[in-house]
Image (cartoon, rainbow, N blue to C red; front, side):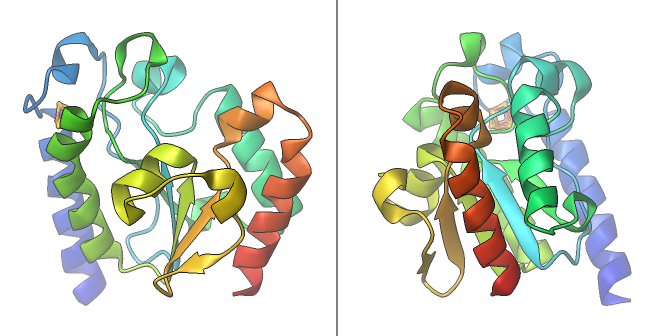
Length: 181
Ligand code: SF4
């Protein structure tokens, strides 16, 4: 019953996100990307913001970085379908620039509400933007591979692997660690 009402609440939250015009990113987006996954997921992945493919499709991690994510999760023995996957900012910043602090502040209540509904055991922060938004500090290279506040786990954003292939083994190793928690 609890799960049914949470699914309903998540559906209406996603609807609100898709029609949101609170910040200027609503003007340039094609589709908002609320996120997807089971509402009772044990693990939530939080990225930065949608990119071009995600904006086109309205789904998180649907492009090249998404392919890295899927591959790395599989290598770590984690089923992507079992995760709730979303971003700090739900609409694509133009030219994939880093979201502004004002955009993050405007959008963050949606992420907090998603976390309330899903109540994940682990929230995995992919890269510096989610790290800063939820922990108030950044520096993924130093912070990765550890649990903060008994809930937040920090690792690289899969897009970083596209720039530096050597990071893929570290990403997989971090996902393996999450699987063992
Ligand atoms: S980025 Fe967030 S706050 Fe801004 S328009 Fe999209 S959903 Fe609304």
